[in-house]
Length: 350
Image 1 (tube, rainbow, N blue to C red):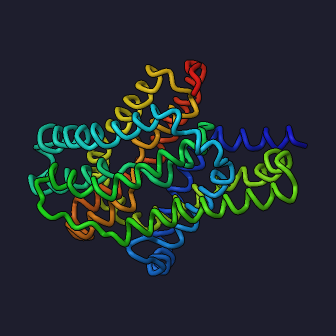
Image 2: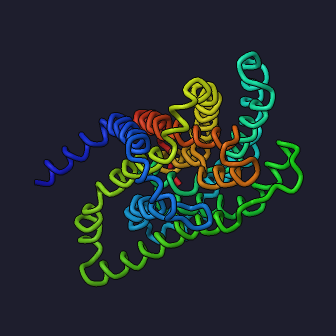
Image 3: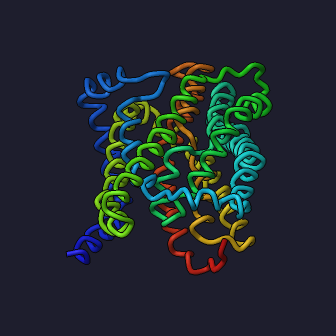
């Protein structure tokens, strides 16, 4: 019975890229043919955070938080190298490489295709993505690469603290925009929804179940009941996200492609910078993989919200952040596969 269950899960994850593609198509179709669905869901938001999406992301993250053992969290301080890799890559490298790659493509390579005004707006959207490393979906990528749940949590928590003080100055510096307005409600609510609440729920559940049934039952029976929740939540999230953005994507097919090119290149570059650095420092795979994933993926809720507040809903900057959502999941799934196939190259320990 247990072998059959494992085989079923393996099959599902093995063809995850296909399920993702199907869900993106379904989402766009829903937005095009049943516009009342995204219109209704769009009203269920607070501080620019969609509550339905927040709930689904919570369902994705909760199973990961169940595995967090606070004894392990306390031990993270003894191995700071993974935190250093994450922080330096995300804040001293990523925003600046994103600016450089986006500027090269939008102002030089695509100069004859994109107007100067749109080039500036697309550059702004790309920079907003580059300055906002992931705080939620990274738990999914960590789960898929069998990352260390406790270490991933600390990496994300440190990122959240740095975002509070570094996001606005970096964006202002790179874009030459003074007084960048950050939607603090969005930032703080996102941190609460995507980190604090699922973490608290996971801790309470862990303590309660272990107290009643023991550690053996918790690790071998209880946690496995949630094996498919993460993937299911991811797929449902995609359907909702792309039902919101379907019309925008269908109306701008060429520009979607042009924006996607530098974003994809940046994603691969940052992943391999962090992942390669972790390999060079002999970090274990369960730390190295999430370190690469955090920088490669983006805090798209914040990037979209800031783009809309600074440049407007119909702006090129807002479109660029939406394209970031479009390309992120397929590209990150490719990087998950790369990480899993190269696991045997990592032999280090904490």
